[in-house]
Image 1 (cartoon, rainbow over the protein chains, first blue to last red):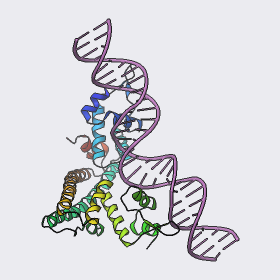
Image 2: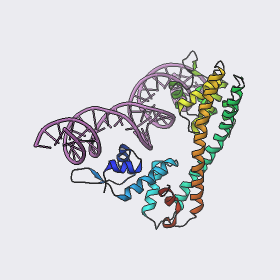
Image 3: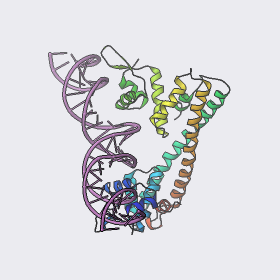
Length: 131
Length: 131
DNA sequence: TATGAATCCTGTAGTGGCTATAGAAACAAG
DNA sequence: CTTGTTTCTATAGCCACTACAGGATTCATA
């Protein structure tokens, strides 16, 4: 049993964001103390950690909701969850490849600039000629 | 010389987004035909492709502007250019490192989950128990 | 016990980066 | 000349927060 402030500190998620998640239907409506304040239990720390991790992995809230729904019905196939993760993985790998190209180009530029060569910055070409 | 519609098709950036970029100061104010319509040249295709790539890599528009400055202001001193590139490089490397962690986790998750049931699906487990 | 700080509540508005729509003007093809 | 497409500006909506405002309640300390 804890307050929203305690949950916020425990989970590292802003109070306003927790309330927003409830509004958005990602978290269930919190049960209330007689004074009207939200009361949370230990399982909410887990849920919030789950949401935070999923968001950091690039899942949209709509996908997070889907994943949470799956979690609450463990008799269902995990195919959907796996597909969500796979799609995410593909996007991440594509991003990663292009970032490496950009990093190498920036490194080249920093080296060139240090050698006194101005005006041959080719970031645009580096990023434009990728597929 | 082309219209905003042609530029949109060539670059894969929505017309509205092109106008938004102009409003936001990411693209220079387009020169206008006598009838008031925007006129673009070939160099704008490159600029837009660059912006799209940079955005997909997770750069904010403010950083995109900085990156564009590297290319479009060759009168910048060596020092300034080098500093700008270095700052972007640091941001890229940080992003890269986090993406690698993320990719490895997603790979592990997808591998661990082969059409079983949610009960033994590690996608959710992995997300819940990530340190 | 008083009082001031902290916490919580709801509701609303602002942010960034688009995206969609309305209504008007211009243009292109038949 | 009509019809359909393109463009224009201006405005509103979307997502996922984030930041108030203004009020109620609770907690810590004098």
